[in-house]
Length: 399
Image (tube, rainbow, N blue to C red; front, side, top):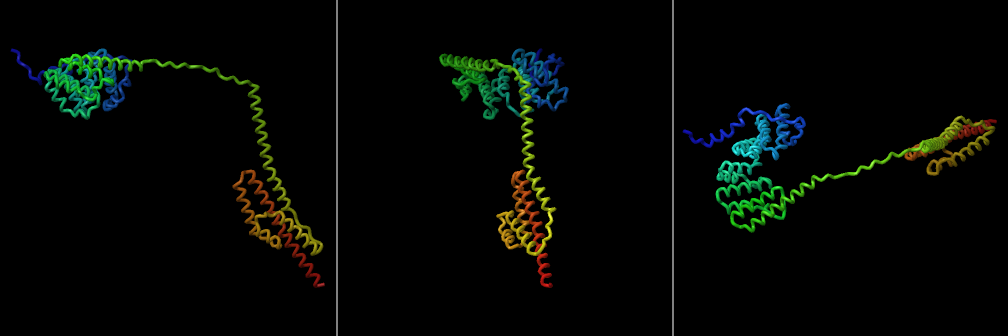
């Protein structure tokens, strides 16, 4: 006599295909681990490289097949889960494929495992709906109420409301089912990815309540939202064409190139001439300074001639001195040569030359150098003339 299985035994029996021997489905060579979403690949880094690659390729196949061939996608999900049983994304994927293929018991187990591994309630709506699939609407409502809906994102909250409304309908709680759907997102003037399903569920409950006119209106809202979303999605598939215009390369005439080179050569020659002109004053100043350095005063015939010559040279030196140095000028007029003042004048002129342009600095330095050398020559001439005059006067007195 057949005995009745307990709920735990039925659940274990329903999970037996996962634990049995499984043959991996084929994966095209064109599918690589890079076809998997980067966030999912990050979770697989705890696996060995070879294992992580196989799991990633199976999960990538699930993403490609889930809409067109859910059964084959489920086979790939089983292969991935068997190699990565402690990876949340592998258990999450298996839960999704199990739900899509109607294996609600497996979906419940995998969702609970995913929640335990990740600590997230991302798929609470599928858990509630899977409880309904197991013909346990009361447990479905209990599971939905145990979750803090404020911590869910908008899409998860909308799907939870739809699942809870279905559980209420299973318990013949039609009015409560309508209240479950009356959420802020129930706005016919705006369309999101979840709007057609939400509007359709609301229309279905209105129909069960006998409110046919309102039901037809919300069914129309659902169709309009679906059409708007389809049109919006189709806009991203349009191919934007860019016209590429190839421009012919510009051809240069050899004569033009020769003329350009000639102009450059002329400019270089002119620049060299300017440099030589700038250096000329410095060379002239050096020659003048050298002439002053080698010049020697001729011996005087008498004291008066020597004194007159010294005074004439002193007057010439006074004319060549800088007007700005008043102290040096006064001393020169008195017949006294101030070496410190001369050094200060030379130093001042040198500092001004350093702040000027390069050419001006060379000229200023040359002028200062000439003046200094001229003064250094004039000083011994004047002293020698005075000494000779004194000797002549002494000899005259002795005679």
